[in-house]
Amino acid sequence: MLNLVSVLAAVLLLCGCDGLLYSGDGDLTDRGPLEAHDRYFLDLGPIDLTRPGRREYKLSRLPNEQFAVGFFTTVTTSRDGRNLGTSKPLSAKIKIELQQDNTHTVFDVLDDLRNWTWSEARDTYTFLYYEGPTNIRIEASDRGTVFSARRSSEYRLAVETVVSDPTAAQYGFRLVATGGGWK
Image (cartoon, rainbow, N blue to C red; front, side, top):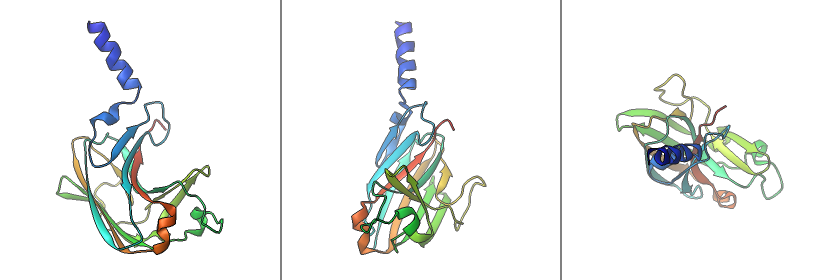
């Protein structure tokens, strides 16, 4: 019986079930320990950038990994065929803040999306995250909306569309956090 339990534990570990420990808003997918980049993908759902508004999310028991928080869309070109990563067609202004254990501000960003990094992968998706300076820096290794998560911590993520952009609806933005991998 002990061998069966050991084998099952090893299979669960190799299948990438570390994400099963996550609790909070959204769905965390663990792509497994063999994934080189973005092993963990936390999908917090659609985000409306077409009108002003604010949403808050609770995150807890995240894997001890570095995560980038940002916006994800499977659209990589604008309606006129231009690449999103180079044309940066949106003028929305976003405030995004991450609090750790209700006592520490991990990051606090207020900036136009045109100043964010627009990363495209093989014409399949565009990921927007912030690399610029933030108002508060807790850890020297953290920058922008990139942070080092701790499994023992609870986080509160707040996202506010300060200046909306009615054209954002055509891109189907989702709020996500992605990180981990062996590279």
